Length: 413
Image (cartoon, rainbow, N blue to C red):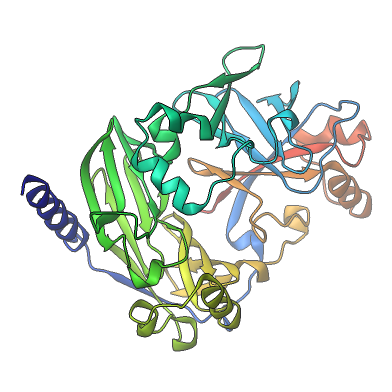
């Protein structure tokens, strides 16, 4: 009875927060086939360069994503399973290889602890989704600890040694710091293994204690979540303790201040891009049946991601059932631009900064890596355009074409 009452309180508090809004819900009309194009310089400015130290054997390859840590520029090289560390002024610090950890392990930066974290399955065991749920439900049993492995690199320690650690419950639940001492859990799963059908798409924990849940669903047989694991989208803003929240198969963007949440924007799509009502009522027969549906309806909305707002613009990434697309909404004109149609020009050195998904955000700044050869080629062909001061000596040194350069930029205010 007590658990039932606690669940009822959580439902009511979550629903009340979700539908109590201090501002009117704003609608954004978006037609994927007709989203306009523009020059990149209309949206982006404050471009700055940090050339990275030339080091023999170090080159920028495909899938080299940057990360901005407390003290370093960090470049992940996923194919090579390496991490490159540079100081904030571009000096080379260290190349760290994590090949020996195996294919299941990828680095995640833990800002709170200033660590790189590698967490994954023990390669000596093969786990089904059913196995993983059983382990999570019985994590306190010592025999379950052997199925997972965890390694960390302390970025405050200049040795940058890979250390083995004991996996914790927060690791397997993928619980991440949210605000103050609260952690968020945003995975959505269904299984007949669960005895209690009530769960929440977004949960906030203090330690191992659930303190608030949002968007209740049936974790045994919720139709839209059968045969697939989904996640709530959580995007930090430039203001501490304020997040944007997005849900699978939902066209609404929620704003969350600490643990109070309300609808902020609604993306209005053509009927052909919206999942039908039957998606939530008519279950798929199998995982293959669901995968075939996604392939055959690739431009139906699956989820909104990567929400970033400025006084003038709203940047969004939309994941469709089998496609991705980025958009910039201009508030003043109420027009939407498809990111891949946004073209760079010579005023920004012909650099395509936002057309792909290979940049990261740190507060109000964005960062991406670029090959030095692209810059060398541009200035060779455009001798009338002055080289920016932070690139002058680097360009004159004629660095190897694959040397990485960090580019920092902002959305216009």
